[in-house]
Image (cartoon, rainbow, N blue to C red; front, side, top):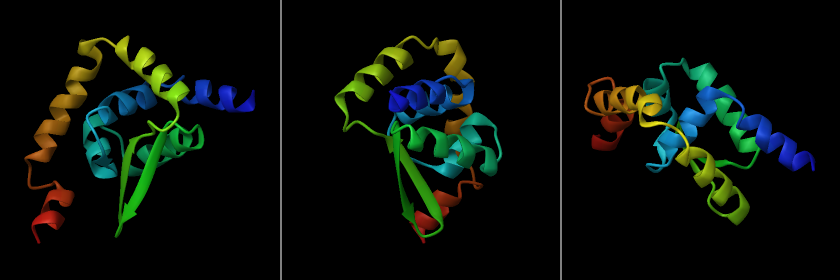
Length: 117
């Protein structure tokens, strides 16, 4: 039962729900989440730690960068996420996706710089 409590607590925050919705697009670097959500890196790390502890996301390190993706290995979590994220309105996520797209094409996109070196 503690696992369920941890999972539902993780889903009880607006920023974490937005991060999960953004991660539906696929794996993203933490810097992309910073740009999309308009939060600072320590806040993103805090929220990602909670989501990871709840088993909702997975992460991997690549040098000094951390990449996050949805954990689709557990069928219960997969259906729970699909159901919850499907109920989010487009107007709630649209500003985040716009900021993400702007960041991806900007010179501030440190992940893109690293990939082209």
